[in-house]
Length: 387
Length: 169
Image 1 (cartoon, rainbow over the protein chains, first blue to last red):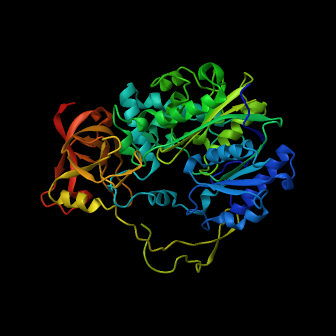
Image 2: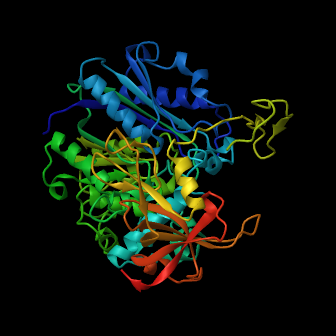
Image 3: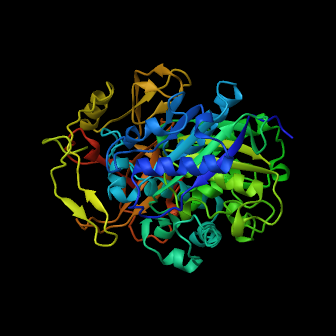
């Protein structure tokens, strides 16, 4: 057993949906916090820290809506933090909560995330406002075109075609059928993926995660308490300029996931893992597009560089495989931006507890790797959990 | 950029009721004025475009030449000021095809990232003349191309595009 940093005391998530019109953002935070504390059997008065994981709030009904909820949330009055690293926010916030508890600065820190995708149709416009207005107007401001550039290079380098790449989302959507929290619960075929509208070649609509409303919570406690243990973390940040990460022999991290591999090595070193293929039993990786899952599998050392797509086509990484990846269906079955990294933690925790219901993997897992990516492959987070 | 003008947040719109679920929403939209400061190297960069020249900047911490230039290095945590001529030839590092259509019926385009000769990063632009009906646009990755300037550059990003060279790198 590795050295424990902290313990996952309780987890909760709301079913992911396109619309959750019955809840305000404040409601979502409060309800999911209640559920996580109930899961942990911990009273709200015994929580002494709160970290909010947040994504852009410009597309919510009111901007910065957490100010309408803060005072009543467990731990907020004693230690309060906010993390905004885009889609990695949830995992980053979990890492910081574990660090805070592990350092003895608090006994129980709650991590919360919520998103309401139905409050504005303008997410793409909001994300494009991140772009430097002096950058080339042809530079991709949206995720689909950016990851299409990544996928195109990956296919060319590894001799893959669109059919090879479609295996990822087909596997994930089949997994999502058994996930009662998933937003998309219909299996799809490779032919349906290939026939869906092209967003930016080679990415098609069915390659992409949907816009999602949802909420997630994790209560973190000291290493000595019973529960799933956090045993390692690693992170990395690189250039905002995608083009600076596309250069052979200098920095190809935008194409080969080597930044995420750096974060993984750091996490593995802390957790005492030197052979991930033997020591990791499952992975939950943030992948809003299939290409991100393939790069994550390789970065986590679960396959050699460039062969993840072929292995997946052969059945590796499916729920019944030796190392299942995204047995929950992953982000392509639902991905509230603020919470999607935290949901990776929750799903891994449920698997390690043996409480994942119909999506539980057959072989009792002892360890899990979780990962998340923020921005256009710029920010990387990896965590290791053990039963 | 957000639209300039008017009040920061218009909450004067009538309340709307969603017939599907009978929940009440208040409609709002943003109208905020913003100003964004240009990097101090960019006026020289855009002035060079008017002369049909491409400039990158050397990172003193590692010798890399970055295109387009900016004045502070994320990688080296240092100030960059040495402008360096790059291109016009280069290599396509990756590309995608953006479909046409939409409300303005825009044409399909090939968006490429090209590493100019003399640069250690790739810059974005449209690739013309290669056809937008290629079955596998990724087959063009690794091909040499060049920046082609329009006759009367205005000193902005629309001054040049990429066209393929005949040979493969």
